[in-house]
Image 1 (tube, rainbow, N blue to C red):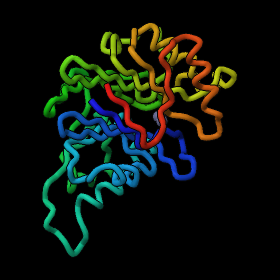
Image 2 (image 1 turned 135 degrees about the horizontal axis):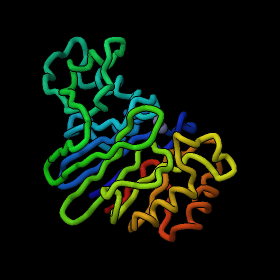
Image 3 (image 1 turned 120 degrees about the horizontal axis):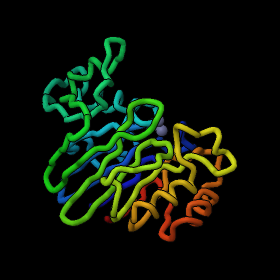
Image 4 (image 1 turned 180 degrees about the vertical axis):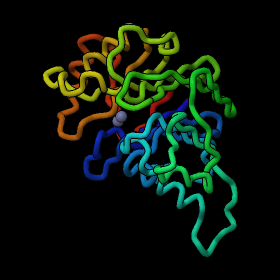
Length: 245
Ligand SMILES: [Zn+2]
Ligand SMILES: [Zn+2]
């Protein structure tokens, strides 16, 4: 599997940057995981959006989904060109659509599916399973498998005493690291500190830990330093970089 980081900032991007967005590819199949601020622009720099096989949104905080609005317009085509008729599979948290939400109109460009426990998606060489995280809104992390390789994405999550078996033994754990230890009280109940991400990688026996979901004002090298106290193989997600799993 090949992972391209399209965006790694939260809750707003650095200049030229983007919030959460990851392109996961295997044998020509393409999965967009989260679509936060500026991700659609970043996506177009590396891939044709018409070639996506599916989009998965972990939860409905704007830094994870707001560029769906741009993607929807692009999929629908220009108002003078109605020739594009193929809808894209979009996976959202089950309670995502309500009558107030503008997303309720998205069925004109997407086939909408709901994420729930025990949902498994099979796309080409991928199989995707989901687990619910501990966050402010309903939020789903995922496990992608291709052959004997395993990729885990934490999405947004607070620390939990017990993590489900799905987290175990990944080749690559892409994990949020929203705060330094000194700021732990600000993220309690919503996000992980970098140190907790390191502890989690060790507990779950990850092969490598890729930190993401950075607050733009941090010196992110400090986040890596705090995670590295608990786990050896730590990298920082960088936009436009690719990681092979
Ligand atoms: Zn969130
Ligand atoms: Zn977030």
